[in-house]
Structures are given as structure tokens and as C-alpha cells.
Amino acid sequence: MITDNGVGFAKAYVNKLFQAFQRLDTVEEFPGTAIGLGTVQRIVRRHGGDVWANGVIGERATFYFTL
Image (tube, rainbow, N blue to C red; front, side, top):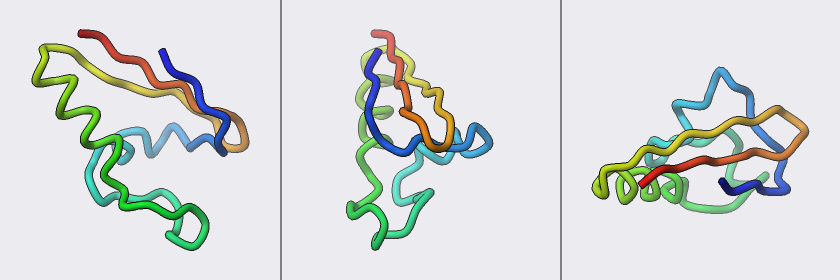
């Protein structure tokens, strides 16, 4: 389990989090390439695990994974 101190996300968009180049915010708001969580998911799944997240807008997000 990893918890961040970011702005969170709407649960309706949780599946978008792990798709490469899918953004929930603009580049101006939060810079980056939008491939980080997609890469994490590919690595975890190649090792037989799973990854998922919970979050609330305006609060932190929590990411879980199993291997």
C-alpha cells in the first residue's frame, strides 16, 4: 500500500489511471507524461500480481498492489 499527498481522483475515473497517456488533469496543472501508473500496472501484472487504487477528490489517493 502506498498513500500519496496529492489531490486525489474521482472513483469514476479509476480505470483511466492505469492507461498510458490518459490524464485526469491538464499538463499545466500537473506536468508529466501520463505513463507512470500504466507502467507500474504492466510490471506488477507481469509478475503475477494486481494493482488498484482508491481516492477522493481533494484528498490523498491510496494505491495497492499484490505480487
